Length: 152
Image (cartoon, rainbow, N blue to C red; front, side, top):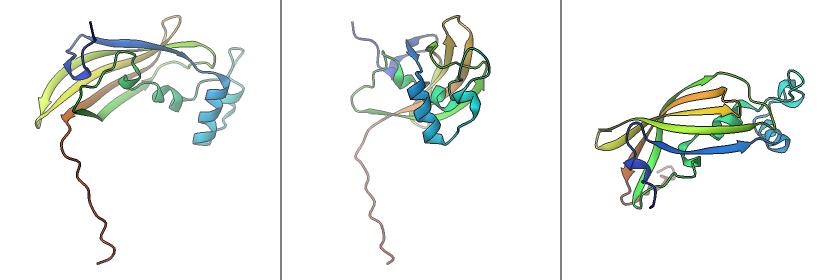
C-alpha cells in the first residue's frame, strides 16, 4: 500500500523518520558556504569533537526529507512559518534522527495548511533541535509569467 500524500496526513500522523550522520567533509562545506569558521565547528568544545553547524541541522529538517514524503500530482506546497529551539549540541560523526509529527490540518483562504513538529535527536534520544512548522498546499494552475518593463 502506498503511503498517503502529504496533504492527506491528519493530526497525530507521522512522516517516516530520517537518520543521517554529518561527516567532517559535509560540515566543512557548510562552514565554507556560510563563512563561519568558529573553532567549535572545526576543533570542538571538548573530546567529543566538532559541533555540527546549526545551518546544516536546519537544512535537514524539512518534511520533504522524509522517506515517506509524497506530493500529490497537480499540487504544490510552500513553507509558511516556523519557531525553532536549539536544545543541545550535535557533534560531527554522531547518528542523528529527524522525526515529524503532524499537529494540525486546516483550511484558510482556500488553501490546506498543515502544522507539524520536527525534532532532531541523537542516538541516545537527546533532543537536539525542535521546530514547529506550518506549510500550505495548493493546486497548481497555469504558470503566470511577467515581462520586465525595460524602462518604458
